[in-house]
Amino acid sequence: MINDLASEVRHLSGEAVALCYHCHKCTAGCPVIGAMAYGPDQILRMVAMEQQEPIFSSKDIWLCAGCYTCAARCPNDIDIAAVMDALRQLALSEGYKASEPDVFLFHRLFFGVLGRLGRSHEAIVLGLFKVLSHQPLINDMAAGAGLFLRGKVPLLPNNIRAARPVHRMFEESK
Ligand code: SF4
Ligand code: SF4
Image (tube, rainbow, N blue to C red):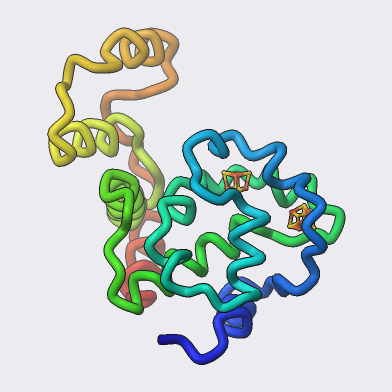
């Protein structure tokens, strides 16, 4: 149990949830609100109210795509994506399992590839994701082929000079 959730969130994200006056603009613009249980403004309210259990077990913190639409709309400049990020970290450190395991798997794969190659590589991330999440490979094949034909998803990753320092940075951050 965290002593003071709002302070811990502030420490990790730099954001003060007390600034929120619940104008609802963030939630109105959130592209994944249809799949969320609470929505970003309610999550901030729950942080202020110390409702740790429902936050940490909610799918909302895992469904947040970090798109920053909410931050761009917030009249108080609250970076809600950073708050969601902090809440994910705290949920894991408190022993909660990700309530959306596929999202957690995607996070791990994305950062795993980034840490190894120094940049993201969509074909590797998505290929591994499909296999490890037991999704039929045939799903999304048409969309994938279209992206490949337009040169948006290269089959092989480019070597980049910064790969080694990026890898070191990931190792040191563990
Ligand atoms: S837009 Fe900002 S102030 Fe308004 S509800 Fe969302 S976080 Fe709170
Ligand atoms: S950053 Fe997350 S909470 Fe904010 S609008 Fe995007 S998906 Fe919704």
